[in-house]
Image (tube, rainbow, N blue to C red; front, side, top):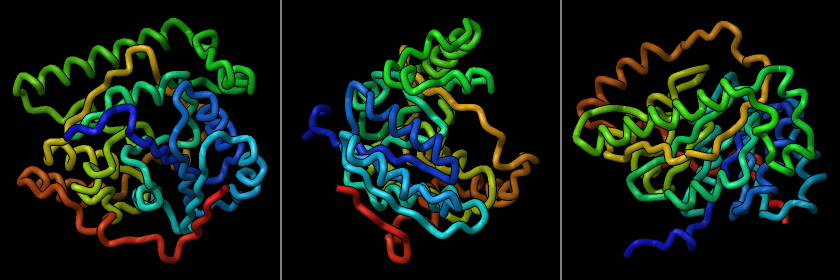
Length: 287
């Protein structure tokens, strides 16, 4: 029997690392959604600027349960960090959001409306300039009035991405093989059971790059396809200096080997959700 969309519990997994001011804005954005999440999991990669004082401050005013899980920081382990959030989540449906993203008013509502088993959803993201980011105020986030902040060119690029992703979706429905729309790890949603089917993120990816591409390919190999139904909704990416200035992808060789295996149908990673639990992690539930 199909589960009714209205009965689906949404777990938002908010990945964080330092920059508590971004975490504050992201939580404020979630607070003013037309559909509130069933819970928000702060999955932290061992921030030196602890997120806990901020969460203690904000929790009395938040309208949703808040869970904090953190691993010890050791280089760049985003794949493991996102799996931590999945392990801590109790919802049927997972919405991944990075801490540097702000959301339009009906963003979560659209995720729930189009939630389908065997499908993951990939919204658009509009990258703000440094000047635009400085003009993002608390009032603007509360009103979700982001169109006044954006240029016509940014909005048009957003619409082109929607049409392009729709073309990919229709092409696949017609039988053409494609791995698009492309999965974006900090900006997608999926039924938890579909993610468990491929064993979540591959934690062998340590260091910047490739973990999202790997997961996307494995989902497609498992016949779990991407779709972008976000005509009027999008996420705004706040400007900041990149964590990895060089852009070097140290996982390229491993990823190339995995592509070969995935293309033969090997869509489950060897080091993922099934090999893990929350043992050894900082885990706190705010009530």
